[in-house]
Length: 247
Image (tube, rainbow, N blue to C red):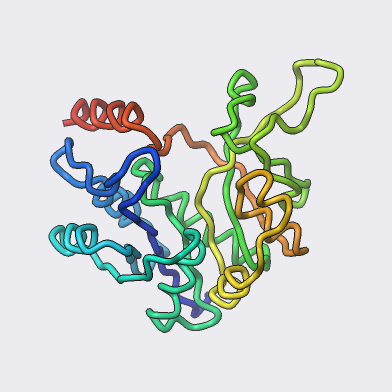
């Protein structure tokens, strides 16, 4: 059994482009960030859950529901930079595992977090992530990030475009949606955050391509998942209706 700790760090910032103040939306009676923390809490392999934020209002909201928070710089260029800074401030060991759960993913099932930790350890890769089958009719949407991976469960490429391209229009191509949850060893997280952006990353707007283009392996596993992240007010309205319907 590994002696490494597994820490979920949830980056949460106030200044969302499409939905400002998103972590604090509370039409369900709870702020959105609380739903994310509570979704992860049942994970069996997680030792600690921390919200990393640059905003005092979010930090206070986390404290109010009994969560654990850490303040990070307002100048973090990306979620990965915020994770790396949080890992440094938390004084995590190099071999500890950090799981990046997005602060707008309230449907993420705790067992998937456990599966991701297992994948990272079993693969020996410095970084791991998950994907799920995607209907062909949804593959053209650039908001759905697609991934192609090898038989030994290593990511080959991520794209906002439809990949793989069905050249002969057979209609028999399998598409996979990338889920924005990652696990890293702390040592690699620090390395990753220090690397300059790559051309593919800048073209696609996908940070994980930085790791691939620099020659690092990303382990990946296909799982069943029918939840969705919250990017817009319409997404949040659907989540609110679904949440209230479960009461």
